[in-house]
Image 1 (spheres, rainbow, N blue to C red):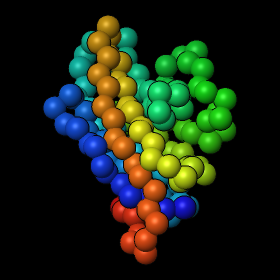
Image 2: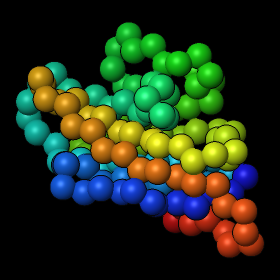
Image 3: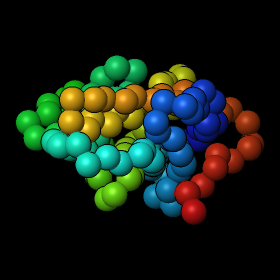
Amino acid sequence: MTLVLMLGISGGRGQELYPCITTERYLRIDCEFSPTDIMPGPYCEFKEDSKLMGSTRPNAQPYMDFRRRASVTLEPPDMCILILSSPLSDKARTYSCRVIQGGEALENSVALHPLFSAKAPQDCC
């Protein structure tokens, strides 16, 4: 499974997304945000093409296809992390990170495209 990474990263909305491929060939997306003292939160959500993959919010219900493949964690004070096993590489997909702090939610997205050449994707450090 190979992906071209980092088309469509948009800054200026409060978060930065850093996708990479782990040594286990899982997709990892780090979502760095500016923390606040506003409660409740922060909570993190990741979506693939608008389907909820995982969340740190209590009672969030991920889309069935992702319940055993996606893991979302919050690493205080300012990082949300998605780990996705067996990412599908048949077409381009858009991944979104949404950070909820108090009554405010900021979302940012990155488009990841399949790679059909010998170029290797960016590996996680």
